[in-house]
Length: 285
Image (cartoon, rainbow, N blue to C red; front, side, top):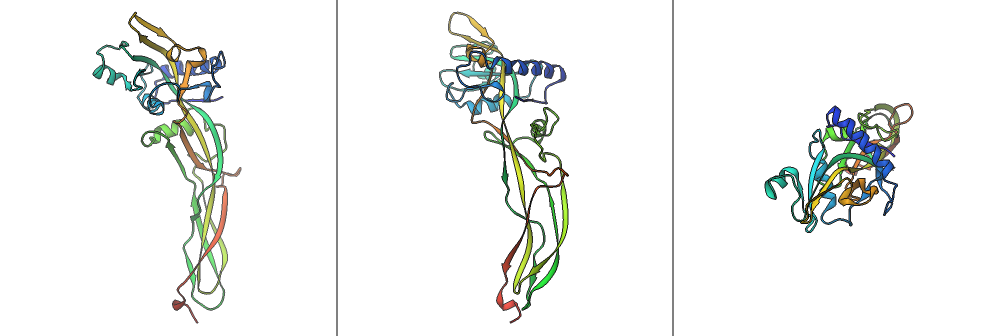
């Protein structure tokens, strides 16, 4: 199973994260209380309090330091705070207090699923009309360029730099699939088509596209709490068994969408001719 690591880490931190994420895949199968998800991670959605989709989004949306990313969870209310928010709003020291539990670790991106689908038709030529009373033939010039984009299920728009780090191959590759992410391809064709009387004709292109979905995951380095009898530090999420070394929230995912490419590098899809009626009063009787 493949984990795509966040590319904003400095080189030394990335090495640590790589090793940590690799270990998580091994530990995920040991003593698991539920089936492991992408990258061997355990799903916290519906298990832990609060909006865990938004928690993971906010946790992993932070800039990583050499020691990772930090978060705080109020296990009574489900409220999440970043380290800066916790130090400002709850306690001036990075120590657990009351229902607030603290954690540190690394974020990555685990491939969850992929599928292909037929995209929406796009008009790729100009309209050419025939206002006569008999069929006409015209040469149509049709052009198209592949499209690529990414979207998140939670939070705002995804930055282009993050999308590229996940899907373009700079960190982890394009999930092992032949698709067109950041591989611009275009074509221009010429074809002769018949235009019936009092009709206008254009050419459309229906692209075949692929989605690669990843779930952001969090690898736990340290997890701390204090129930009144001193600080306790563990190395799994909320002190659970070894299968909880890496977590994710099922409802938070990032989709990379791109036109598919044929083996020769050309866009994969279908060309069609479309027709529309013209105003009869503008055509020859």
